[in-house]
Amino acid sequence: MATSISSTPTPAPWALPRLTQAQAPLTHAVEVVNEHGEREQVQIPAERPLTVYVDKRELVTLMTLGAQPELLVLGYLRNQRLVDSVYDIESITVDWDVNAAAVRTRHGIERIEERTASKVVTTGCGQGSVFGGLMDEVDRIVLPDARLTQAQLYGIVNAIRLKESTYKSAGSVHGCALFQGETLLTFVEDVGRHNAIDTIAGWMWMSGQTADSSGQYPAPMSGADKVFYTTGRLTSEMVIKSAQMGVPIVVSRSGMTQMGHAVARQLGLCAIGRATNRRFVCYSGADRLVLQPELAVLPAGPTPAPATAGVAIES
Image (cartoon, rainbow, N blue to C red; front, side, top):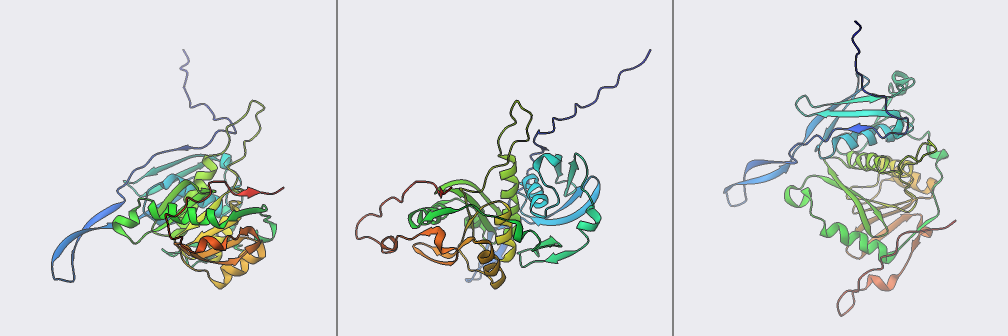
């Protein structure tokens, strides 16, 4: 008598990848000596290696805080241009016992050896890297004609100021966020800003539309009406990754590098830096920023609540 063997059903081609929910402590207690010669305990951010395997092939080791490792891996594959769609990925399994992430694709990654042979070391904290062809896609990116008001910018800066974070308790991490107008959609911290933006890219892919009855591949979340915020400087890597996510406006608490500036101007991307309190400088794409200079002066009375409208997208 033949024995039937059960197998896992093949996921629909538009099914989002299955992700584990691996957990790891975000901070670690250490003993220090302060300026008075006293010993005390403080919290410092955790940092751990995560080796990524794609279809059992070792790809890269990422140094990460480990807050949302599955989304980090997904966004890394997206921003490295190794996969074209979230639906190319079947599953991502993270196991902190062995510090590894196993990615299973649906059809493999074409020419993966050739595409990962050349690597460019970037200025990202934790020695970020991107695979060769850093500038290859810049000429093909067309960003939407979005606008951001000065009131909305102040709302974004204030939302970050009020956000409870690992940085406030332990320091030494970068934070990145995605906004729709002044509405905070997601906030990510990691030891490097490139990890944080990759995690947001993964989150956007996982937050797309659900499949419809026609069986068409649903589109990922659009970046057209979004604003990307980072505590770190705007390097070429950060600008390109934001543009790859379709986000036309970036805001930084820090400054900008020469190459980041050149790429932003080429893309027509609005890059705003030194954004603290009511101060900022717009490095590029000033036509996307609706200035309200009267708001830069603190009023004598209570500060009025900033406008809550989203970023306007012009057709």
